[in-house]
Image (cartoon, rainbow, N blue to C red; front, side, top):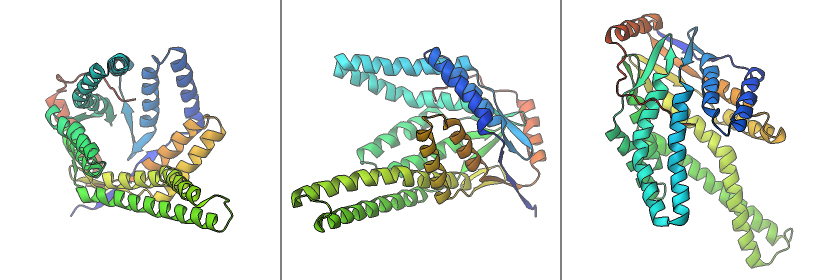
Amino acid sequence: MVEQQRRQLQFSGSGGEYFRIWIVNVCLSIVTLGIYSAWAKVRRNQYFYRHTTLAGAGFDYHGEPKAILKGRIIAFLMFAAYSLVGRFDPLAGFVILALIMLLMPWLLVRSLRFRLHNTSYRGLRFAFHGHSSQAYINFLLWPLLSALTLGLLVPLAQQRIARYTRDNSAYGSAFFKFSAGVWAYYNIYLMTVLLGILIFVALMAVTVLLGSSGLIPVEADQLRAMSLLIAAVGTYLALFLIAYPYVAARLQNLLWNSTSLGAHGFSSYVKGREMVGIMLGNVLLIVLTLGLYKPFADIRLARYRIQHIELLANGSIDEFVAGLQSQASAAGDEMADMFDFDIAL
């Protein structure tokens, strides 16, 4: 039996180093009215990818700024047309919005192909092989059904999207596999809803108690309205500041613990309370520094999330990668149907 080896991902980026890249990116993007943002994205991705290593080897990003700029121009023109036409003719605006929604799954597939094709590890590139027909079901149908059911199908939609993107992603000729079921997603969101209800009830009770004791000098009718407002706003802030990091941590663990690549698995062990501390600290420091802490916050969060992921290698990584490289060399680069643009920010 082959002994399983645990190989932790490492991240060597530093806040001071990335700050210099970030400040140049921001300034040039402003001066060029956003045109430089495509080049900024390439510089940012290359920095994070090249400072992420696995088993002593680093990742790399090969995206072309002009291709990214092309995708952003496409996205800008679509939403500009919707905004301008919708202002004068709501019906025509609705038609344009419907056309954008119909195009979006097709565009997302091309964007995924671009991003994965331009990501490499040990000189071997990743790839996305998903078909547009499946994309319309996962990127359009399920989100629409989630909206129509007032969010009840959001966990189901998220699971379907994760399964579609992971099952159709590959490293060389080896495909990823995603095994998490729908109820694993519902468990995460049910806990979040329960937390929200408890916070809402607690804030209502405290407000009513303070009003009844005379500490809040208001009439009974005003007290009920005030307690509802305080409970609603307080619950929203609590969910944003506490529940969001908790959900992000749980989702990362679920995604990676349910993902495999050939005979190899992955493990993620991010802790919700630590994510809460990091994200709250980042938000506070970004506000206090008027945004200048943003690059340091990005590095801090990336280091924590990356270094809590492990590859569970069942066999030699070197032999696995070497085998895929030889297959890729023999098969050639089959990217004839790839559209070279990325619509993501």
